[in-house]
Length: 92
Image 1: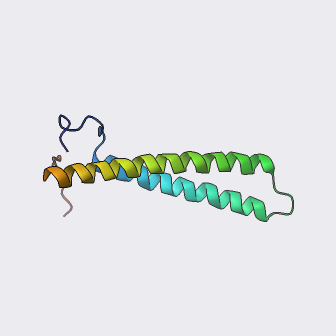
Image 2: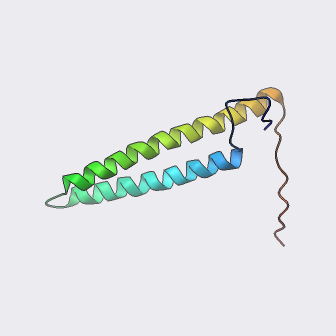
């Protein structure tokens, strides 16, 4: 990814994928908590509202990260290039 070519994309592919993973995990946790609370005889509406708000927020973050990944792929495919930093770590 070249920073000079696309002003919209300021994050690396790895950063976008990481954000996508985090948002998916948090969304799953919020949905699980909300569903477990709804199963109770007397569910706490305050907790349900809090977890629903968290779910919506993570869904928005997930959509933003997914759009950024799509943009990076589109740029790489249309330009035929993808600039990246070489990972200097070794896994021996």
